[in-house]
View 1 (tube, rainbow, N blue to C red):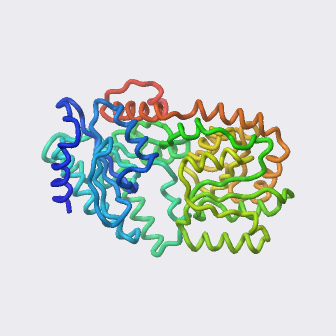
View 2 (cartoon, rainbow, N blue to C red; view 1 turned 180 degrees about the horizontal axis):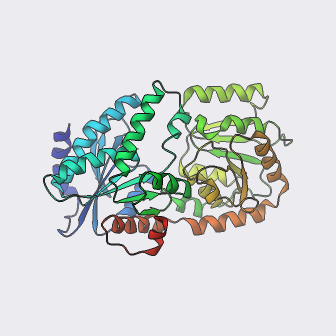
View 3 (cartoon, rainbow, N blue to C red; view 1 turned 120 degrees about the horizontal axis):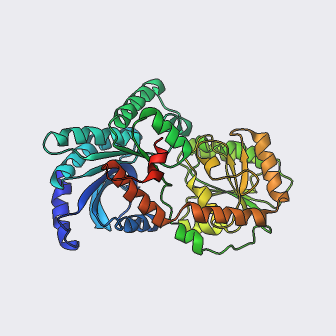
Length: 416
């Protein structure tokens, strides 16, 4: 299969602009899925990343189908086949993904390897060790976007949980122990990464969002006239949606609807939520919308009184920023990086994770508070917190940090 990738990549060179000899190569490896052509948000992200003029970017990930893909759209993509089970996908990325990374690193003299989780970080570390036997070593960057120690177990039930955890933590320790720099997205992910890599410098910036979509969308209903509550994210146990349904059922606002936006990644849990809504006699007021585009998500936020994110664990909560850009206050759990975004009573409300009484009280408050002023504070915060340009600049500084070229005190402060 790796010959297929290299052969097809050679045939693509006629499609692109010749790369200057002095550009460095950065290779990404992740379990992210990409379509061909890219969806709008992914296209926007990688188009912006071409602003890193000193770097040629090559991305290893998964295709959106069982057929492997190799193409160029802003950057170079080498996509592994999407097999039907998580075990097969793990074996694919640890086997073929690692071999492919080694081949690309050797062929294109890769200067930087970016692993988008500690587990892919182990792949990158092994690949770099093998490659360094033949040429000088590449700088290794490990990204930590969530509570990797627990999140997978909060998403679904797993057989051999203890064995899986032991292997997972061993891979994380191995990867972090060989990191030249670490990218985190919140104070909580920074703390966890520092536990495993106390001597590796950190850079902190949010995961990508095509915030231009949210900035240019106008509200359909003024926030102080809106009645509906919106949740955006996967339908998985870690998001605490069973608590949200119980709290929503206690509201004395019969015209209010709860819109659940997101794919049913855990089908059993999604069925459980539907049963729960029926048992609570709110089935006609809870809308299971499914996955939506960024533009559709913005329209839902622009008609909501509040967005609710009752997570039991959360790396940051990018949807919090996206909702706030529409002037929509957010009710979120006091876990992970959510408190980095919500100032209780200012731009939303914080509640203890799993505490249905607090969640009910916060939902009631959102109908009594001056949500217009709260929404304006939310919008001002979000505008300052993230922009696509800040995202690209974050990677520029992160690369400099990994290569030992940065004296940026802002980045060094996150490594303290």
